[in-house]
Length: 107
Image 1 (tube, one colour):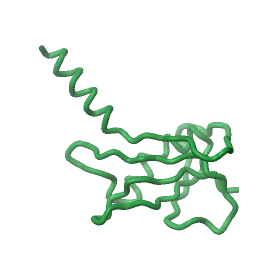
Image 2: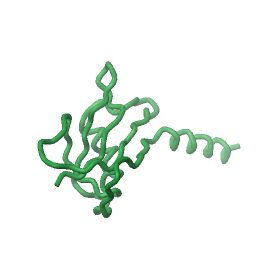
Image 3: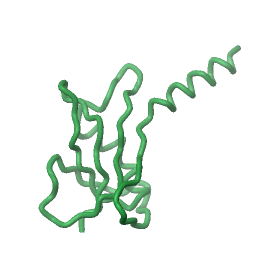
Image 4: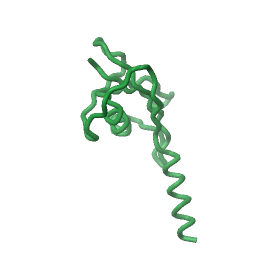
């Protein structure tokens, strides 16, 4: 019974984690897993490549990321793994929680 409960909790938490979907036609080599990324809330004035979209999922008891720093920490692993050096946060709901962000590589 304990194993079944543990499995159910693990599946529930995993289903709540953010997802990454590749977009665009440009790919870059992965950066180090702890790379530093910049965050933009409007498109940067520099040239950039779009690499993919992070769709934030609500975390149990917390909900969607409610701050730029929280969204950044959830998206950083996806950005670094796909060669991104920045996150463009562009979709929030009516109560200030971020729903999506675009991983980009600023040139």
